[in-house]
Length: 211
Ligand code: SF4
Image (cartoon, rainbow, N blue to C red; front, top):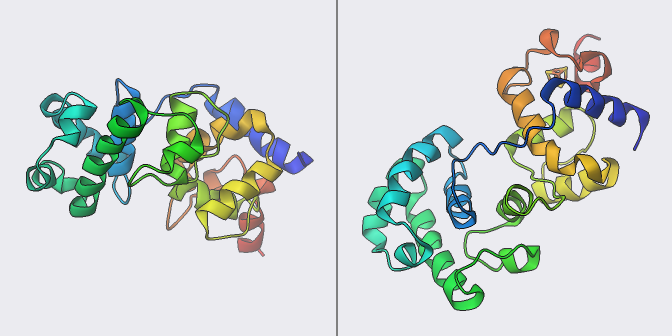
């Protein structure tokens, strides 16, 4: 890992520590899978409000696999894109039962066969449930890794592979947690608070802006 990249991660580690608390509330792997499917284009806080009620009404993979589509659409209406999300949730739970004995797999190739599950969702499960070194590229990670010059792409999948090339494996699992923490407080979209940022002296975006 380059010295500058190491410095970024040293500072982030000092700032946020080794805590790997997941922002989406869940008691089980399948609950995190469903919450992550719902979190696309939605805040974690809103998803947590919905799942608090949803997982009482549908307490198992089987209950969601058997859900009525239009009723589930109403149940998750407030997370947005509810038609597709409800359809994917039911199809995903049916496939979990049919192909994986109702258990959430850890293998990325198996996870991404599930309806509604792309690499980001699969990596959320791998890192948070199975503690497998994986890079979760969400909107914060994509934005901030570009600003810090770690990647140069708008494509989340390319960013995931590029980050795996330039960042030591021991940090992969932390990238999402630390970048979200920075993105919610300082490196906000659309206006980052660069003056308050503990990375400003090594951030190429800040260097460009003060020229
Ligand atoms: S200096 Fe500004 S752009 Fe760079 S990481 Fe900090 S807040 Fe983001």
